[in-house]
Every structure is written in C-alpha cells, then in structure tokens.
Figure 1 (cartoon, rainbow, N blue to C red):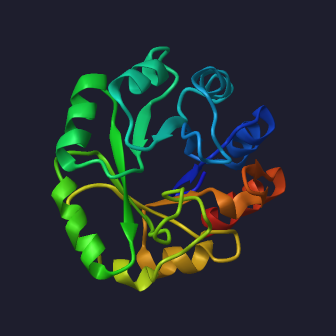
Figure 2: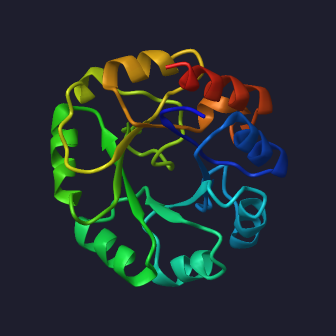
Length: 214
C-alpha cells in the first residue's frame, strides 16, 4: 500500500474498478456529469461502488449540482465523499456538506499562484482541496483533459487542511509531481486511459506502482 493516497477517477467498468482495488488505490471516483465521456448514472455508480472493499473511499464527482441530483446520488449510501468540480462557492459547498452528511472535496482550477491563494476561502467549508489544471476558456469540461499546471506553485504549500494534486498526471510523471509538490494525495483520470473515457487496466496498475515507489 502506498504511503500516499491514490485516487483513480472517472471509472466506469467493473474491470477497471477491480484494477484500482488490486493496484492499491485508496480512492476511486465516479463522474456524474452528462458532458463528460466518463459520465455514469446513479445506478451505475451504486453497482461499481459495490465491487470495491469497504475501506476504499468512493467519491462522486459533480459539477454545480442541484440538491435533488445529490439526493439521488447519495440515497443508497454508495458514496463516501462528494467532489465539487464547478463554480460552487464556499457557502454552497458548506451547505452541501451539512445537508448530505458526507465529506466534501472542492476542485480548485489553477493557472497562477493567485488561484491557489484564493482557495483559502474554502478552509472550514470543505474537507479537502484538489488542485487541478485550469481548462481553456469556453471548454465544456471543468477537468479531465490531461492538462497540468506549474507544479512548483504548490512547493511549500501551507494550508490547514488536507489537499491533493490532479491534472495531467500519468505513470511517467507521477514521481516528479510528488517530488515537486509533496502532495499527500494524487488523483489521476485521463492519464490512465487508452482513449477519452476508456480506462486501461495496465495503465492503472502502472500508475499506482509509480506512486507507491515514491
């Protein structure tokens, strides 16, 4: 088991969930966002989450979700955390955490140091900050595009809460990312795919092996 937390995000098949489990990932993520090639519905999320052992965290990724959507996704108890990947304010994030009783993650889109500094507004409102690359203006997707930001921006980060790194990660650069940022959690999606939305069992295994060696 890696000393670092590893999240394999955007899973959509039993085989790839199984690969994440065997590879020693600590978290798996399911994207519920219709515009994403990784979109899975509530029934699929429940079925896939059921494959994973109880100690593994199951994170539902949503974008500016309405309460009725969140109620549907959380009703069966399949998810252990919610990841907000839209423009949710600290107040909205805190309200979601209070209403649905699950840990809430907030993805922070990063291009400059100012983006990281602004994330402090979420301290106390969410349980984890996930620093991800900012997507191009006009993009239909808020993430999952294989983009990376300047990881040196996170060097020496001092923030009084858990955080993680996402965006443009793969087995080839995971060790570099950990060395530069000292991130306690590493989150990958497109970097373990053979095509958009199609996860590769071999790439999942290779990624987890690379991070575990750090």
